[in-house]
Length: 322
Image (cartoon, rainbow, N blue to C red; front, side, top):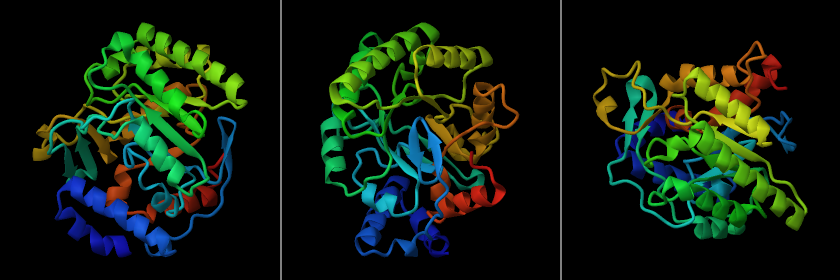
């Protein structure tokens, strides 16, 4: 209710400024113990995935808190888990502004942020300062100026830095806003990257005495062959999860809107059919879409933080949680 009243004011601001203001507001509410003003508590609906026990299956998607600066504020909204990043080994500014655009008629966003972040060292410091002790995923990528033949070096550097405190680590190979990242989804490149990550994870697991699950985040724009190839490589290399999906370069259903001409990845309601199709193909032996966890980003912009508890309560009442 409160967010519904505030949304017109936020939408009058530049999208990146509104994004920053919202995150800072969540931080303040959490410090004051007043998070209930933004979102009612989510019920406990436990689910076990990747060997981890999640208090509920609704999480925060990577991209909203790239540097892990707002973990405590976001955790107070009732998420079952948080994923921060994408983070790269070195800080980088991302693409020039403006680079984030609303499509209110479609409940969608277009972004071409380009892995803007303060680097993995800054992320690590922010996480250590937070009080959150729940499930925390870290989404990792490569710097824009790292050639693909050395991409694994960037992913491995980030994995090593975050391994000791991450609940799981996601390799982002599907952002449409960093040159050549999506080509890492091609079977040969993907197999080499996943093999390197799995081998380094095994080494770190022996060294630190704990096994951190690995996930890979894929694009919604893959054909059936591409999806099958990813499923095969993920299974062969012992990767624990696939996050389906990142944003799409398609403009189906929104091409009539002026903002659709902006380059970048489209997220939100128009992505639902594409993302669900990818999940269904990845789980082709099942009758339903087959997702074990869900993550929110764009829906929060249009529906507000109260959506977290709403979804959890809905899943619980329908008995949809596995």
